[in-house]
Image 1 (cartoon, helix red, strand yellow):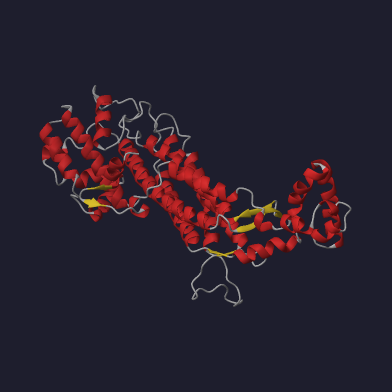
Image 2 (tube, helix red, strand yellow):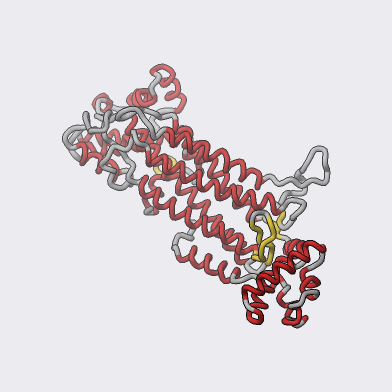
Length: 456
């Protein structure tokens, strides 16, 4: 999305809000956004001679300030029990009698608040992208630093073949980059989400220039040309945003699960940093319990549930059911997602990696993880199929007799095909990591070449 547009959406008079998701979904921010939308409406109506130009200027100028207090608004809402009527009442007291006649002229509440919600989601998306950009930089650093740190690659919970820790981390780097691309596409669609179509979505009450008015209204808000179709009842724009956050949450829930397991006592290949003052258990002094990884897992369970609520809201009644309550759910899911991204970045920035433990764990199978390499080493001498069959037999004997692969191999009839030096070289897991390091470099280049790596 155009950066100037984004800054206009997040920062405007009289208050420049910080890049904070909690602030974006605060009541004060929402009201300020609604005022700005009403100001844009009046300005566009004035330009098109729908309302008097002098009046449109007064309304627009007033909208740039906060002409009432939140306490006044709450008190009025308690009386009239309608959020827009309450706002118009307290705002109108600061306007001239003529201007009061033209505020919110021809508009309907749901259009104003839908547009406000879209603007909040765009602003939140910008914050989320900055957080993912920070994660990108952290993952680049971690992947690069450990692109040659050999560890056990596991499949179905079993020791499989050696990989590197950098290669493992680069998988999340690539996934995070794809998320940023998805978010950019979603943000572009949201910038077409300004809506000014009237009570049943056919522009009734907005006059013969309504379509032109809607386009100019969106332009004054720094948004793109609105969708011609009435998306209010369909809600796919906001459902897509919520479902995207559900997908993102699973990425970091996956990372949290992986790190939770890797720092378990029986593996111990990574450690989640905890300050010395932190208590692991009230009754077991020796325990150093993971907390951030656990938080990532929990968020990956709760965020998708919130997304389901938003998705359910895409089934509305008839033309324009006023289902405003999911706005609160969208605030909750945005805030939860921001917190999860913060936690993910924190755990990765402070992660303690244990290369010696990784090497030690690879020896648990007593060289059996190198059976594939021995097979390929023998293939040139006795054929791939024969070598594969023989090594399967030798691996079975090693398991049955509880001996290492080298001993089992030396006791076999095919040991003559390899010298001891060749055998030791083939059994060294630190030299059998494929193109893991090259793969890390390729992922980093791919991510950086996407041109979205700036966190400014």
